[in-house]
Length: 106
Image (cartoon, rainbow, N blue to C red; front, side, top):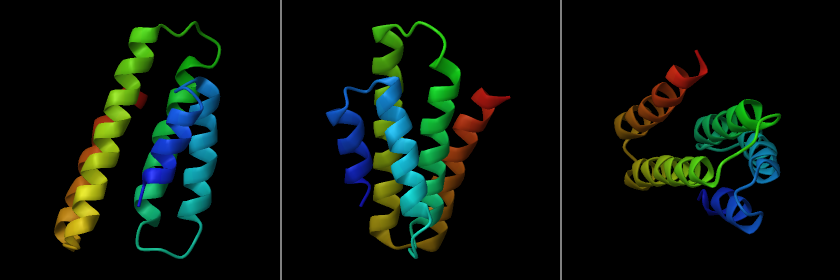
């Protein structure tokens, strides 16, 4: 369900421009009627925060790899939660992903 997000990031080389495209795509998906709107919004916010943090700074390949790995983990956690269909599990996954990134934004 989030494969288009991950595919966009991969196809565009995990670059700042790729994260910008992912944010745009995720926000578009969040605006569509769906049970996944909150997850797409969270993923869009994560991608947008990556762009904000690195847009005017040099980006090391190690940082890119770490960010990509973390983003994949977030997508995997959200996908697994949505696949179960358990509202409590979905909410827990959303809260875990959101709170882990909120700390970085402060």
